[in-house]
Image (cartoon, rainbow, N blue to C red):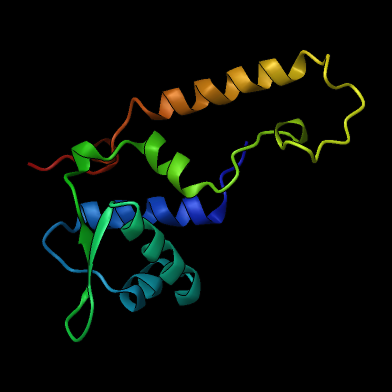
Length: 135
């Protein structure tokens, strides 16, 4: 299983913001620090804002910061919200599967269970769990 770069970048943004709670981040600054394309990062920040993970401020002196406490941001939710299609195999895409083993293949059930378990494991953790312990 592999997460998309979009989800990877989303998690990096949230971790960065969690590590710098008193600072307002900018796309340009974060792109430079993390070596991420400004174009890609703009889309990530926009989506994180739409989903309520960050709050954005426009204009001079604008930027973005976490909209909620790191303890309230579950990693499983972030992955679900940022992955556009979380189909683990072709057979999960309705109408697009050319697999000749369907509909009687047991593999789909096993993969669905594994995908559920993967997300359930991520649900055990919050953004706070990914941040350094503050003294």
